[in-house]
Amino acid sequence: MERADKQKFVSDFNEVLSNTGVAVVAHYAGLSVSQMTQLRADAREAGGTVKVAKNRLVKLALQGTELEHISDLFKGPTVIVYSDDPVAAPKAAANFAKANEDFVILGGALGSTNLDTAGVNALATMPSLDELRGKLVGMIQTPASRIAQVTSAPAGQLARVFNAYAEKDQAA
Image (tube, rainbow, N blue to C red):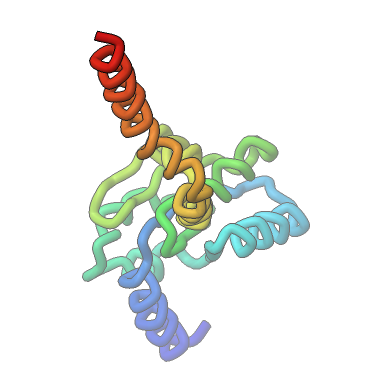
């Protein structure tokens, strides 16, 4: 890579990382090309991106971003998995790490918050934004009859009480 290409990469990647919600850093030594391709496909399907680059260039690209504090994780053969969705990249990385012992999660960042391996795994267990949106839509689409039953039940009980008092007064 020539110097101009490196400068372009650093500036482009800096812009990408500035707009990224979460990033996960991992060692990938020992993975085959097909395994890396699978990681890329899994991340893309989840809404994330996988990038392998020279550590020095990534450290330069991290400068001036919220993620700058994770630059010390870039030692050895590292890969960065990032996404706008705070759950997509950790979920893709954690699932891949379970299936491939050579893929070792070092840590990551959620905005300006530093994440260790446990933090990345905790984020991976949370539902994604799409799943949360689906649950919300499901709750909103609850049949109106159920809502009517819940709201009318107390009124029905009150009507029965009044009716009982009316019958009691008529009997007396």
